[in-house]
Amino acid sequence: NAGVTQTPKFRVLKTGQSMTLLCAQDMNHEYMYWYRQDPGMGLRLIHYSVGEGTTAKGEVPDGYNVSRLKKQNFLLGLESAAPSQTSVYFCASSYSLSLNTEAFFGQGTRLTVV
Amino acid sequence: KNQVEQSPQSLIILEGKNCTLQCNYTVSPFSNLRWYKQDTGRGPVSLTIMTFSENTKSNGRYTATLDADTKQSSLHITASQLSDSASYICVVSARFVGGNTPLVFGKGTRLSVIA
Image 1: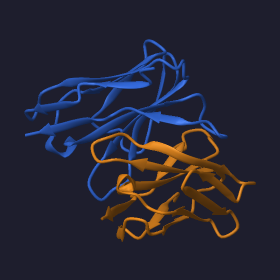
Image 2 (image 1 turned 90 degrees about the vertical axis):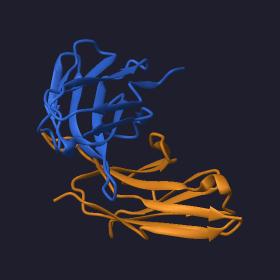
Image 3 (image 1 turned 180 degrees about the vertical axis):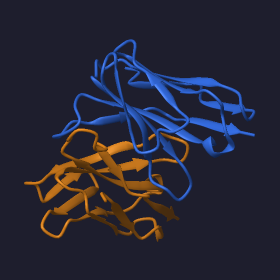
Image 4 (image 1 turned 135 degrees about the vertical axis):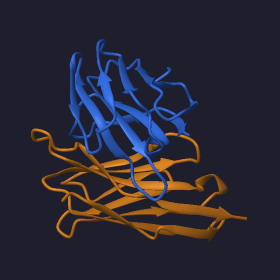
């Protein structure tokens, strides 16, 4: 059981470069999320998706774009990376947004922008 | 504004001792409260989930309590082990309405268990 898998695990980018982070889940979950985690701060929601073909902005969406072309995949793109986007990125998925549903997290992607 | 505050920020205890971590929230309308354990360099892993009607839930040596009236929760760890060293994150879910953030995360309590 893979659960939630993020690729890559580590990446160093130069300012202005672009990249895409991939999140894949094998639990047939409808809901998927991208968070960033910075020192001294809680996880903050970047974008989320409530189903294939739909996305929505979270708390800190600026500088990021997402796509959910397939139910099992949720892509996070940085078009022009900035040092402020240096962070650890976590993807998560869940069956629904509420009640007692579990949210499963990936192992994280550590991104450094120099 | 929906917020989750945790205390203490960090805690060091001796192996075998008990400890209690606190969580206060202002998330509304409340749906459920979760405690996650996050080991260094790993993603968060769920320990407990509690809804409005539940006031205590256990998972092995972890016991979470919830007082929905005062909007407070605690996580009690019994007979701590070295492997309990991690960050413990309180997460509160609001009932999804339009564009509301579905999960609100606290900053976590960093627990270190030493021999």
